[in-house]
Image (tube, rainbow, N blue to C red; front, top):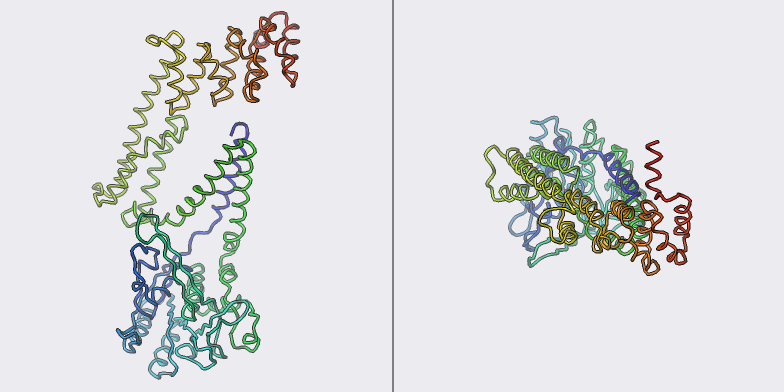
Length: 567
């Protein structure tokens, strides 16, 4: 980025600084959600859908997926569905009793029960168990039904149960029940789109569903989030926050008090217990987009077509890869830690420290250090995926990978220093019949910036035609190339004479580079060549240089500065 590197650094610092403000995901330990429904397919709710058939996605799986989309609380699946699709009363009541037992055995646990089932008639035994469950401190959330009726359905209509209707900000959803027993409404429309980035038969799967069955788990999951974010809340207090932050619905049913407190507002409810939540989900993304926009505009304006290419890479590859990394970071840490995120974090820390040490040994050439660590790190991941963990576990594997990377860094460093010693001997290096061609090949193959800079310096000492051509046309390290060209001008301006004579045919970058070199190093012997090019220089720099050389009394500007320093 040249002189403007600090712009990029400050931009990235702003993004990183914002990300540091992101609160850690609330711990899921104090909350447990019982899901009384059909069996849950764990692979589906975690997004692992490769090869999955539609029959594998049950009603309970869709409910579980909604819950998992809003919170990370543990789910306890209680299958209550019989083979004919009906509800097993025995399994259903046993599930409720198991929730009561969990509350009594673990008083510190916040238990939520999500029921996306409905019956038109009450049941005394069911009502008694739910009364005991609510009295023990659990919170029961149930779907209000999909009959487009105000007739109560159960368990949603039992006292103490949170009955959830389906709707939007514009009104009640078509088919959703309503009535004075409804406590709150939430969106019951769901769409799940899963992608698998593998060459397989199903690369994209989309599923849609609607109904109060999927409105209820939205309320349950929001309450679970609040309980995990603020452990001082009771389930009933968390629901009161959800109720108080609900938004009015523009619908006659709501105005008549038949849709409860209104529409669930997830963002307002979460912001009530996590003040940074709204910033993280609204302000921070806008800041990141602005920073990326400014960075891309700078790249396009500063580097032209190359900047356009870099911008496309940021949006097409960098941004999706970053999002994927954030989403999959927990899975990665769990994988490299052999099932433990903490151990995975430790192993990753060892590898990150190894990268920092390798970069320091390579004079902070991070790309080269990463290239040295990549093979052992790849081997570490392959061995882990095959179950061939090094004795001692993931930490030992990370240490072995880091040690292998350090050995590679040291070997490469020794080779680099030997090559630097050879380059330093040019133009009198033994065995180099064509010095400039040897140096140009070394520059093209170099991974180390020190070698490239040493080659540029040596080309200035060789100072033949190919060397000068490379320094003017193709050397990307502009400042180093200009210093080498200044040395050529100071020692033999004739090597630059052909370029001065065809000054008018040079592009803007070549002109600027040539003029800087001449101003730094040429003497009065260059005046005849400069006079020829003066008329072609619209900037007037050649004319000023000629006047300066004539006034200097024969010493090039660089020599005058050195003389002043000696005095």
